[in-house]
Length: 271
Ligand SMILES: C[S@@+](CC[C@H](N)C(=O)[O-])C[C@H]1O[C@@H](n2cnc3c(N)ncnc32)[C@H](O)[C@@H]1O
Image (cartoon, rainbow, N blue to C red; front, side):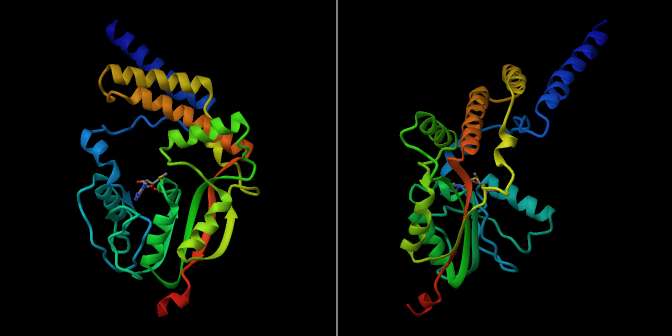
């Protein structure tokens, strides 16, 4: 009897979590239930972030093995057979532990939006790049469609900033001038979110059913102490942020992939 009840229960949970949810949110984003535990150390370590956007083929950079994320990234590199080509270094992109003019290229993908001042990170990239070399970045920006006098626009943009811990989104037309301010030549600027690109936000859309399912699962896991305290609130926050990002994408007021290609002028070699 107990076995039958157990089996039926497990079947119901499976149906509720995977079959019903999948039917409703096919191809869309769901909350990741594989989350690791969030320890106090990790929370306190949030400013010692890792970054992995510099590659020095066949060369090793100095490393600090303290951050767990760095070790994980190295393990992935080893698994992919890339450890001889790519070194992951723990550091702050606004004060990089590298010599001047020591890189052949640089790129950042949706990361520099976290810098309180874009000048600080662009200035550092400029410093470590060799003259004549390129830097490409994807910036999170508000587009010219954004209206500061439209409360719905303001709420969506504030929601994105809050949910993604951003110091404030920059305007699309600010990026090139900031790059020029630190010395870069602007080679190309292109909003890759615009057509013919497919809408990037559709993966973030989540129906009410999927939301309630995930919410219930997260609550049960927290109650059973499998998930750490606070995960319910994090789930809530991520759901709200996904709604704001979706609105930002649908209205076209926000782009997460405004691409800029910048060159450090060759003339800088003589300075
Ligand atoms: C939205 S994620 C983008 C991640 C990256 N594009 C990727 O695909 O893995 C933002 C990244 O910026 C990094 N970040 C934020 N502030 C940083 C800082 N001051 N120095 C270095 N990395 C930073 C975070 O650690 C995070 O990995």
